[in-house]
Image (cartoon, rainbow over all chains, first blue to last red; front, top):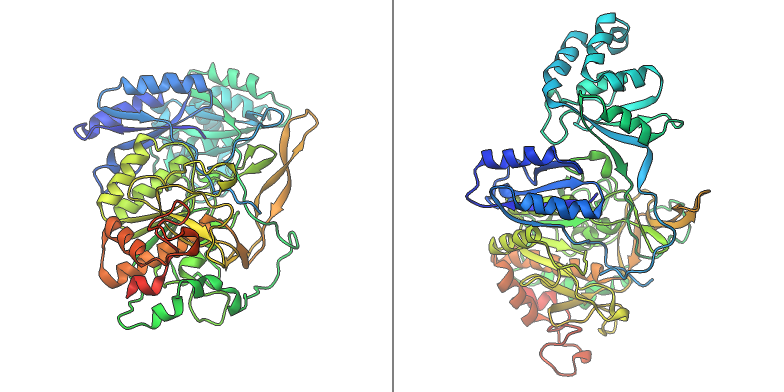
Length: 89
Length: 485
């Protein structure tokens, strides 16, 4: 499923992160939104989050803009596709 | 890393019979009280008038559709204690509860509603969306996945595990594996954590099961996207090269005896790619696995995956953090030499150890990408290793349904138990295992020192024409004995 990944700033509070995720979940086109690893030990992994969205490309662009505008957001991106190296045989 | 080809007929975008329905969060307590009052006798309780009234109050439109026989099944997205089927409206109530606890915000109140085949999903969706008790209704998009490799010689047949003859393990001889293991000062990698982020693993494979310390295969949001089985077999093959049990009179020998930490990062749902349906990395499972590797402090990560898209911010941050934490990351150069060796990530991320493939005569394999970021090469042609003991496939050929839409056709079967595969995917675990043995001998040396040691100890090969570094080979082909000397 298409997903938008975003990172909160190190300064953002847990409350700000939860508020932003809560707001995101209510947006049209967003199927779910969560921290990448709830209960993460490492400070970085505790502030990476994602939203699974339906696959309307136009909406993804708009959603990315809206996420960027939320307080406490450091970066927003759509992950590139990864797969198995294609073999010749 | 994957060559783009024009696709055929347009894909169906949504499942015809599925909707994701999310109940308003303020009805959570009402839903939980239904479960409390009903108890375990769901079927009996559903005939009681008070139960009918209570469940109808949670989502009247859904309840009325269910009573009209339009709903086939409702499955809460929250993970449940037991898979025992329950009446649809009880399932809705249970959507607020996961494993007996309040479910997480992501899936709380959300269920997948399967409609009867005759029901128009769009019309049903509109009807549900008009119910004020329902927060959102969405169609379920179809997602598909990818293939590599030779098809099974006897498609679908499960042959008894056939151990390759020792003479076929040319790769181990080439890296001087035997002498490395008997050299003075050799330390086994028993306590080294090597992560394999791939298509999964066969946890019951007799050559691997003793080596597996941890296996994560579920999608954090949607368990139905990924089950325990390694369908493609790629991850099981990679894991065998690293750490198949040595000298157990069975199958192959792995290069070391490290602890395998396995993360499945591929969705089980194939996607259309040109004229095949193939499996792809799920970005949430992938980045979650990288985050886990950071938290679990793994020593070495094997990434026999790739893609030409530059890392997004989150992937880049995760790699930076892993490398700063002295985790050694080893990745495949890619197999697209014949289309000009497009740069592939994560191999091209700075300080990731990028690995190319060589053949028996030490010449570069004719598929192995060239590029200045290559660190070393390793054997990557006709590499015998483990495969799942159960049947599986690389993907599916495309067939066309009555409406002219592409759908999954004949599966492209793989072998079971053991097989010889080609690829930079197969070369990469040689280097990951070598790095694990280096860590066992010298401690957590980190990615820079590991890269330098691997490069200094590599055998210069004729194809390098006397150069110190070469875009096909890096500084040469892996030599394990010299690395650990």
